[in-house]
Amino acid sequence: QSQELSQVRIDYHAALQALVEDGTRMVCTGRMHTDRICRFESLCYSTEAEEFVFFHSNASIMLPNLGSRRFQPALLDLSSVEDHNTQYFNFVELPAAALKFMPKPVFVPDVALIVNRFNPDNLMHVFHDDLLPIFYTMQQFPDLDLETRLFFMEGWGEGLHFELYRLLSNKQPLLREQLKTLGRLLCFTKSYVGLSKITTWYQYGFVQPQGPKANILVSGNEIQQFTKFMIEKLNVSFEGMPSEDYIVVFSRTINRLILNEAELILALAQEFQMKTITVSIEDHTFSDIVRLISNASMLVSMHGAQLVMSLFLPRGATVVELFPYAINPEHYTPYKTLSTLPGMDLQYIAWQNMEKENTVTYPDRPWDQGGIAHLDKAEQDRIIKSTEVPRHLCCRNPEWLFRIYQDTKINIASLVQVIRQTVKMKPGPKRQKWTSGLYPGKVRDAKCQASVQGTSEAKLSVSWQIPWNLKYLKVREVKYEVWIQEQGENTYMPYILSHQNHTFSDNIKPFTNYLVWIRCIFNKNLLGPFADVLLCST
Ligand code: UDP
Image 1: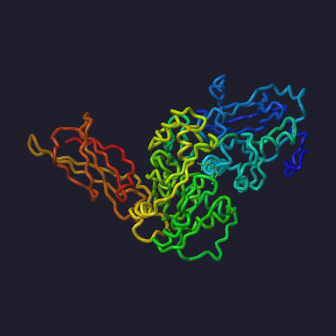
Image 2: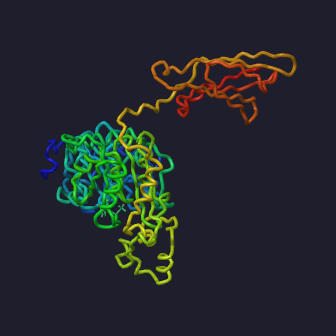
Image 3: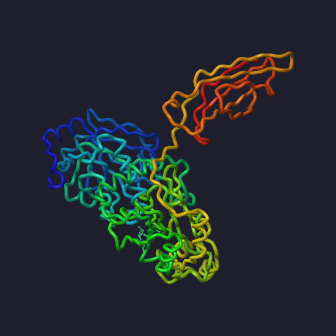
C-alpha cells in the first residue's frame, strides 16, 4: 500500500472479506441525475479500465435501481455544472465472484468525496463550480469532515489554484492520474460521489445564452460562512492593516488590460479621497489578495474571473466591473449576480467602454485569445464593424472572444460619473450585522363575525393574533395583508392593515360565503405564509 493512504490502518483481510461477501452498497439522494449525490460502501475503481466498478453480492444495495435508465444519460453529474455531457458519472457492474480473477484490491481507508473539477485554471470556475460546492456538499453529510479525502476525477493536473482546494480538508487531494500509482483496483471503503449545486448562481450558456440560474438558492450568509472558513484556513493576518478606507483595483497583466491604469488609480484616489492600491493574481499571494479585498471599500476590475474575489468583500462595499467595447454588461452577469445576492450587501456598478477609439483589438492572436484571422474576410469585416456582440452560446464564439480580449483605455470622467450615480458619499464598508431577512410566522386564532343589515348590506369583522415569533423579534414595521374572496370567484379584494382586526363593509353582500386569507408582513417586503383560510358566511 502506498504511503499516501496508509495514515488510517485497516485490517486488509477483513476489508477484502467484506467486499467479497457484501459487495457494493449504494444509497443516493435526488430524483434526477442532475440533483443526485450517492453514498457508497465498497465502491471500486479500476485504474486500467478507468471505470468505477459496482460488485454485486449477497448484501448489495443499489438505490435508485434505475435499470438501463442509469445510462439515460447517466447516474449523476460529477461536477456542479448541470447536465454537462463530459461530466457524467457511472459504474460498470460485476459479480463479486469476479474478484478472484482480478488484481488484488487496494483499500482507501479515508472517507472519500469523489468529484470532477470543472475548469481548475479559471478562478471563477474554481470558486463557483468547485470550492463552494465541495464545501457545502461536505456540510451536507456528517461523514465528510476535515479528514475527508478529495478525489478529483476530471483528469486535469493540479491546475493553477491547487492550494485553494487543499484548504478544504486536512488530507492531500488526489488526482485521477495519481490513482494509477496506488494500485490496479482501488476500493473506497466509504465514499460520496457527486456535488451539491445548491450554491451555484450562474449558468455558462451551454444550452441557452449565459445568465443567472433560474432558481438561485444561496444567499450572502452562506457565501460569508464559506469565506470565513477560507480566511481562517489561508491564515490571513490582519495585523498592521490600515484602519483608513481604501480602494482596490484588481488588474490583469496578460490580456484585457486597462491601458491607463496609473491614471485610473490617481483619479479614484482623488475623487474618493482614499488610498487606492492594485493587486493581481500574478503579483500577489491569495492570502494577500484576500486580506486586502476583505477590508476594501471598493473593488474595481475589468470583467473577468478575478472578479469572483468580490466573494471576500465586506458588506457595504462597492463592486465596479469594467466592460470592453461592444460587450453589453447585461449579457454577462456572473459577478453582478454574485454581488446582488440577498445579504451580500454589496453595491454593484457596471461601466462599458462606448468609444471605439479607446479600444485596442487583437485580430491576429490565436482564436482562443480573440484572434479572428482564421475567419473568412466577410465575417472578419462584419465583426470589426459590429457595435455589440449578439447573445451567443458558450464557449467559442469568435466575435465574443475578439471583443472580450480587447484592451481598454478608460474614459475616467465617464467612469467617475457612473460610480457617482450610485456612490454619493465616501464608499465604505458598513460593518453592522445584517438583521433583515427574518420572516413572520402565520397569524393565529383568526376569527370572523358577520352581520347583515337589510337585504343588500352586510359587514364582516375579522380578527387575528400576531405571529408567534413576533414577540421575540424587534421589527421596524408590522403589517397584515388580508384578501377577501367570494367563494367560487377567481378574484379577491386585497387590503393592507396595521391592526389585528378590521370590519369590512365595501362590496360585502348578505347571505354569501367568503374566503378570508391573512398573512403578516415585516418591514414592507418580508411576506409571511398565509394562515389556514377562514370561511365566513354573511
Ligand atoms: N488571468 C489573470 N490575468 C490576466 C489574464 C487572466 O489573472 O491577465 C486569470 C483570470 O482571472 C482567470 C484565468 O487567468 O482566472 C483565465 O482567464 P481567462 O481570460 O481565460 O478567463 P476569464 O477571466 O475571462 O474568465
